[in-house]
Length: 303
Ligand code: DON
Image 1 (cartoon, rainbow, N blue to C red):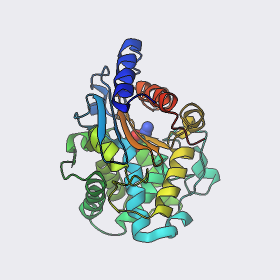
Image 2: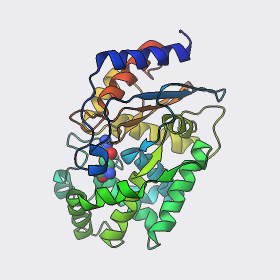
Image 3: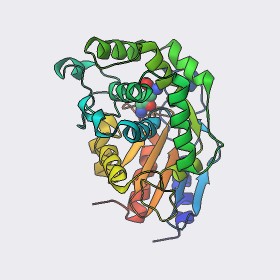
Image 4: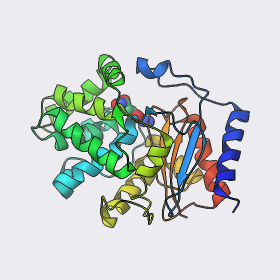
C-alpha cells in the first residue's frame, strides 16, 4: 500500500477533477447555502497519527452522524432496554419516511432512521432538561474525539426547527403509539441540537478510534458495544443506500445531511470525510465516492 498521506492526497485531487458535487441539503435553510465545492478527508491510524487532505480543519454540521453518539450515550444509560422501543433492521425507505411506522406499530426499524433516532434521544432525555441530555452527548463526543473544541451551532438547530414538519409528524406519530415519553417538542429540540453539533474531519476521525478498535483509542465504550454499533452502521448507516455502500466500500459508515461520513476500518483506521453536496439518498455525493476510492486503494474492506 502506498503511504496513507499520498492516498488521501490522490483522492482529494480526483474528487476535485471529477467535480461531481451533488446538492447541499435543501430542507435546512442554513445548510442549503453552504458552498458545495468543498472536500476533506482525515484518517487516524492505530499509532494515533492523523493524516488529512483538503479542508480537514473546517467545522461542518454532523447532522445524522450524531445518531451514533446519541445511540452510544443511550445504550450507556439504559442498555438493551432501548431495543424494546427501536429495531435493528435496515429499511428500503428514505431516512425521514413515516411509512413503516404504521405497519410496525410505532417501533422504528433502527436507531439511524429519523424516527429511530428521535426515540433514542427520547430515551436519553427521560424526563430531564434537554440541556442535560445534550451535555451528555456533547461530553461523550468530546471525550471520544479527545478535544473540548466541539460545539453546537444554535443557528443550524433553529433553522431546522423552523422547517421540521416531517420530524414533527414522526414525533407525534411515535407519541400516538406510546413510544415517546417526553413532550414531543422537548425531544425534538434535543434532537435538532444534537444534529447541529459541528466537527472537522480530523475531529470526526479521532472520535471513531474506539469504534475502529485502534490502540490509541480512549476506553469510552466496551468492545461488545463497539461491535454492535459497527454492525448497525454497516447495515443501516446509509439508509436505503446502505446495501450499495456496503457493496462499494465494504466498511461500516454513518452519513449526515451536512455531507459528513464517519467510516470505520476495524483495527486499521478511523476516517472522517466531508463534502456538503448530497446524492438522492441524502448521503454525501463526493464523500461516498471518496470512501469507495479509499477502500479500493487500501484494501481495507472488511470482506
Ligand atoms: O432530522 C433530519 O432530517 C436531520 N437533522 C438529519 C438527517 C440526516 O442527516 C440524514 N442523513 N443523511
